Image 1 (cartoon, rainbow, N blue to C red):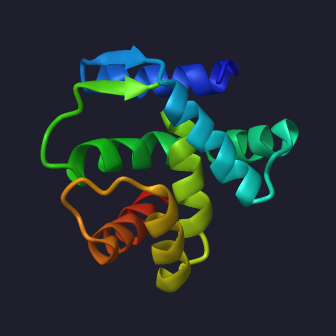
Image 2 (cartoon, rainbow, N blue to C red):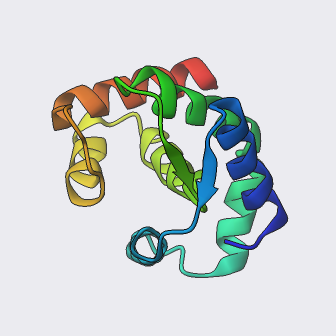
Length: 129
């Protein structure tokens, strides 16, 4: 959460939507759980993936926070770039069933079905790479 790249990416998206960047303990805890379950509990492994995907993260963040939601975000949680990294890691599989399984387990869909979110995620991931 305090990595310079995470902070920069999070700030970029909050600036893009002209909204505040906030800390949410439950959000941070859920991110830790996600990465542990993906066997990326090692900070160096996460940083390596984060740095390797930084351009895709910036593009995909704008689609997820902009195009995929009906309303503009009122705030962006610190660590949102790590959530987007999770989405990238599952979208890389290009397997819609894997994406849906992970989305169902870890995402608050807010008005979208699992199928809609998974298909949109795969579409925007392909568009971002």
